[in-house]
Length: 199
Image (tube, rainbow, N blue to C red):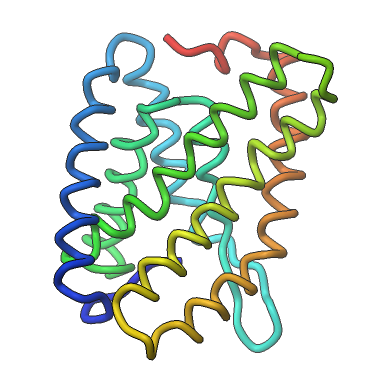
């Protein structure tokens, strides 16, 4: 789901770059104490997740795991995802430096949905916990796919068909990540519940 160099228009790059900078600075304010280690760990997990590819027809998509990162970190997901994306640019040329802001917004902003739905699952307001945990993993993927489509569409009419195709390709990942988070949250709550509590 990385956006490559030379694809986005200058206004879109400017807006998403400014938004990403604000998100990362805001998130870094909360990276203290235990959250520092959690942020580093989840950033590493997000980094590795992009190497787990799921074949879809002649192409493939990779796990995103932004819902999991958001559920564990809250707003600290912003610097965690930014750092992972920066390392991917430096080491593997995934995306690019000019699109780092756009990629951060596309991946990190929907991660807050993971935090929200995970917390709703913990509070149990008459809604099945399993459903909330599934949505915590699945909806951020859907949100990222939608943001990606919007960013591409605003950069030119010729990119709209590509945006639509990318969105449809990520629907299977929506279900995969929802199921992964459902089982992972249930497992972690049994064996290490403190890890899922914010510092």
